[in-house]
Image (cartoon, rainbow, N blue to C red; front, side):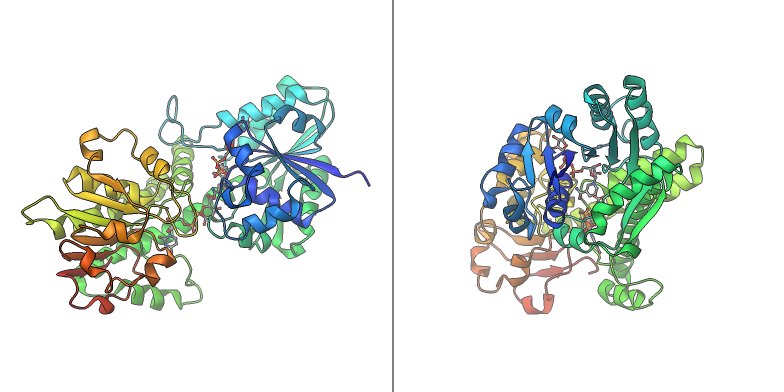
Length: 458
Ligand code: NAD
Ligand code: UGA
């Protein structure tokens, strides 16, 4: 049997895991994941213990399908030419220059893909917009394709991805829904159905939602905005708890038990990170401003403002707790990833908080179980050398505690929850402060060990 050829441009956090799961569930497709980044492709083809992305369960899935019906390659042209369905899963960062800079999504990568597809195609194709992009991007892709290639038919489908890092494989295997947006024409409906059929191989029919192109694009931005809004809501209340004596986890529990509200995404933190929440909300804000609905724009922008407030508030708590020390103090910072179970640190709250600390003359010993030393240094790019001299990257919890005046938890890694801080207290120069930025440690277990023990609400 001849297998249907699918290609995915972009072998990142979305393209890699998503295509691995599709290949695993759909042996009748041959899937080639292509990327212009050779190192990334080499890593996907290399040791299973060193894949470019760390996700629980990923290596087991890749092991089953790699070089059977899943291939990783830098030969973008070949993959485009032979494929009937092409997913675009390239990065869509916030624009750094030009109209809308600092807010709008930069669609350069998406448009590059569209141009290349148009130039190389000699057969009809379905183009699947997997990248998160503003409402109207599908239409833009269509016009790019049409302007370059009028001989072939291209149907553009929006199929946003809802996986979260750290649980990507579980999310892909058992998603809450799969969203497929297409044109309301006979051809559009057929194309949407072809894409839906991929997912129908393992996802129940009632979870595969069909909408028009624009609804699909806006639903993705809206979902991320709603999720981030919940975190900002609970984080805003953690500041009020700090003043009043209420406990944020108790409030979250009481509020979340209302089934209309629900209990998920109400865990207070040092602030949300990740490559998408901020970028996608900024994108939404930009769209609202573009359409001159400024009140709506301001409403969503406040979700980001509260997140910035939370990061700053937390940094100040640490600075405050360490003031009055005669010599320069060192704090052990545990966690660099933006959440547990990922090696991703894009937009991690740790970056802003550590910058604040070293700028306040505090030395930082940072440790993260998954984020590489190089990545941490890259994240600090642009920081003054004199400030950077106060940053030390450690390879264990113990070495980060050594010589410090306190401990600050910024990522909720299980390793930190299980760690016996009592046993290692003598490694510290002076046990002045313990600050839990994720509310994961039972602070009562640290009774008497530190001068100050604090969390997000105390
Ligand atoms: P990423 O940066 O990890 O991966 C994108 C890859 O695309 C990179 O490896 C890059 O080299 C490649 N690329 C860019 N332009 C290319 C081109 N013209 N030709 C070939 N390769 C090219 O990004 P990601 O995290 O996978 O996100 C991809 C998209 O999915 C974004 O729009 C993002 O908003 C969205 N998204 C991300 C997540 C997530 O958890 N990371 C979840 C849902 C949606
Ligand atoms: C998020 C969404 O959850 C995904 O559905 C979406 O597909 C993805 O963005 C995307 O578009 O990129 P992700 O950023 O990987 O996924 O991770 P989340 O679990 O959403 O966490 C984001 C941030 O919020 C993390 O820093 C996390 O620690 C923080 N968070 C999360 C909280 O502070 N409290 C919570 O209750 C939940």
